[in-house]
Length: 340
Image (cartoon, rainbow, N blue to C red; front, side):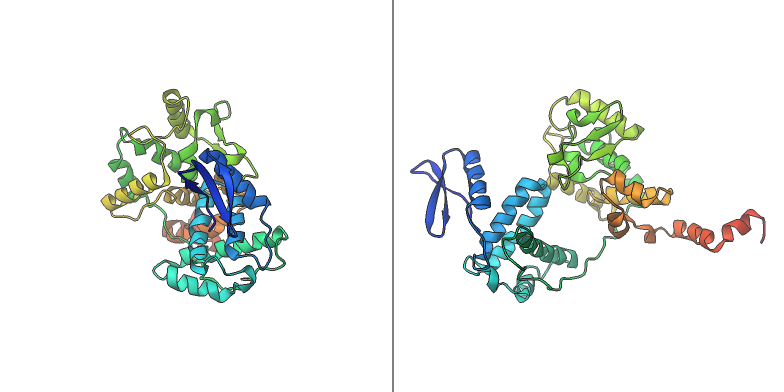
């Protein structure tokens, strides 16, 4: 894919498009901004345009309009697809079969969900071009993709107890882990929260629009008593910058957070990842009788679809389902009446 490059002899950044070099300036940050402007507005896309040019423009748009995590996810898949098809294949030459061959070659050891995500990323790039009226139809429309397999990961009470026993209050992970457990927030949200986001009067965090997933509505994270006490203490310690930090005083990254959860899982004999706390929060809320739409609002979703598809792991809760079966068949009322 097209990327800026630095010429040491000229002490300046350049980008090459169709054999022509465009100067971008000496300052790297400004050079990349100029690169984004060039890609977004000065390079027209048609069906005869090299497909990687369209992908570049989609990634530029994603970087400017979506979260960093979303951009990184698209970039990982689309960079792989661009490397596979090469710089010469044009939009109208792309076929669903190209995606199938790409998956076979590049994702042969990946799970179904990663393959599903790879297909969605490619489809999204072309659908975006259609929506922007850059092309009339997606060249991969109708392609089949591996079925998504919802994660069944959800903490048991015993696993959560084991986690808390292994992470002492002096451990930098302690506060972040408990905060995610008490709020159900996204791992990427706990990494960017600052004291300036805290609304003490209403006991909530309100993120800026650019830091909110989807960038359409400001994310609100509501705090129970334990979560509020954690952030009050951290806000005094870190009035500026991220509240949750590693033992070296740096902000958590996706890698460092995942790594700590993985290591903790090795110790307690379970598969752990940061999102498992969000899944568990949603499931426990449903078990306690909170309706799916309210759970969705707490978690920052616009409707309950995601809750029902991904975060609800009630199928694993035999105790809960046994009680609900009694309610569904009327056995609970019989027991209340003392009928054997």
